[in-house]
Image (cartoon, rainbow, N blue to C red; front, side):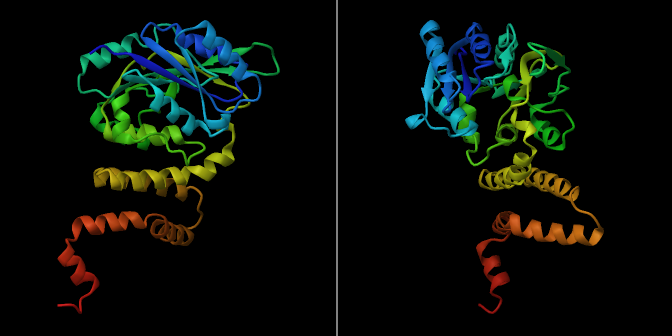
Length: 314
């Protein structure tokens, strides 16, 4: 089967970087379409996308109903459900692909028939708004070693092998039948949420990790500078992952890793042993009742559950 790539680019007020991003995807031979989804832009991005669609046959412009703003998750999801390629790749509108972005990906996917996707290194470029056109290429900040698919999730959740960056990921469209789409309840951290689901349910192989296949632009409008958003949504992401894991027959040892990751994260914000114990007990029970239900149902058949809960019944 021929492997064909649909590139999905969510766009919101990115006119400063947009054309470079779109053309970097259009110029990849393996790409059959570039789906650009305008998420209610007001800075002229929409008009520029209309021009690019007219000039390049690969470019397909999509909108939400009534051209409203729905956020990155919903915007990427519209791209996924509209794609015609059997491979999906993502590119943020202020980033760009490097030459031959997908050559090695196709090789890896053909080499491993059981593969669901490939991850690669991404470089970073800092744009200084105070100095015209000045940028500085930074070191790679992505997965830094070859990891077997069976242990990839453990490495990612523990932070021992580096991190994924969405511009370096190419996956089979069929993988989304296993993971579901992006979590639209998350305003940030939606990429980590889907990455970990992919690592749990799919088989992701190492691509290029010693050189970048794409460049991420770092500037004053990046969402990761909005620390308050991550503080707000990070626990939502973990709780959502645990609920999803319990519904999708994820092994208990992996759910346990998620619980430990939450404990470590929350532990750092607590001071004093008494407060730590009290905080953990309260949060563990309050936020993760579903886990207790899951374990209870799994390990206590109906008859034993009745005897445990209602010992007076015969």
